[in-house]
Length: 148
Image 1 (cartoon, rainbow, N blue to C red):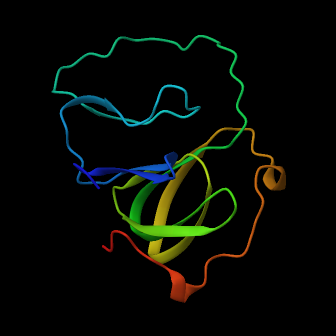
Image 2: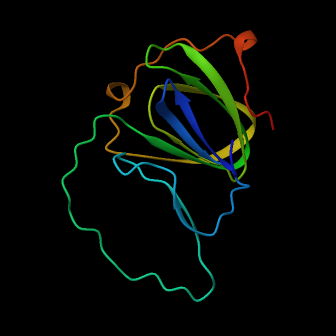
């Protein structure tokens, strides 16, 4: 973790971007490369800043994988990361105010404390066509890289 955010990688491939509640850099800071189908930025503006009114133009895009962002409102969530072959890699703990963008590979979750979160992902959601479920890592094999 560096400066309140972290990129979770597996062999150079981006699995996730985590922006911890402690992140507080000035200006507009994007955490994602421009080619991703979801973009995440942190913005800091002073009182009185005006952001131009705008509409978004229709731009055809082709999306192959669902990327999801989780916004933790309260509680604690453990995120388990897997590679594309469903091999467990490591885990992270998220708490209130943390945000994670899940980009690639596999993932699973365990709620550690009663949780409220918001999930944002591309639609339309197609249920079982969107995901392949598999057995999670055994509890005794969990490695948490950032215990809260």
